[in-house]
Image 1: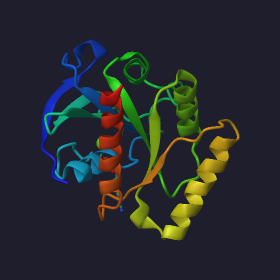
Image 2: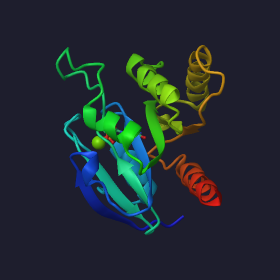
Image 3: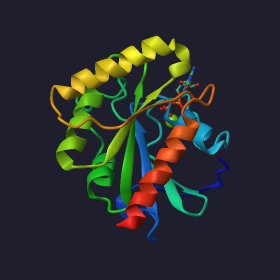
Length: 200
Ligand SMILES: Nc1nc2c(ncn2[C@@H]2O[C@H](COP(=O)(O)OP(=O)(O)O)[C@@H](O)[C@H]2O)c(=O)[nH]1
Ligand SMILES: [Mg+2]
């Protein structure tokens, strides 16, 4: 799949996001989860989303126009442990505004590290999405760092954890920015979501 990706704009608040009618497909997760790497892998543009060595630095909503058809949106990371105790566990206003109030926001990918047990902050965020009726899927990142069996175990653990609270589980996708695993699946998934929304 060939992708034409162009940086469109960075927004400090949701009033600044593009005003056209194209839909946003957004990516979010804890700082360092591998969000920038995944965006670069999906678009095959090295350095499109800067792979940051200082996690938690990006505080802006970044829009990238994909094939002139939709926006890939890079959201700020949440829950970086180095922020103050008071802030930890809270979600920045810009994130909440965008996810819950911005009409452009069409679908959200929540990234979680495939090597970790379900993290409290991710579960908190996912719970808010469920309560708010926000359409989302989970992407497990860095799958190259462990065996397929270990990744499957992590997915099963996640399903079990979410099933304690939710009847319906979100779609779950596997990825590695290192070897390109998941690229076709994720892009096909996005196509499907956009196609479904134009049928309505
Ligand atoms: N092995 C491996 N390392 C990854 C992968 N994705 C990200 N990383 C590394 O994890 C660190 C954080 O990645 P980055 O994309 O900056 O995370 P972000 O803070 O979520 O944007 C960097 O050192 C990346 O090289 C992956 O799929 N496989
Ligand atoms: Mg980043």
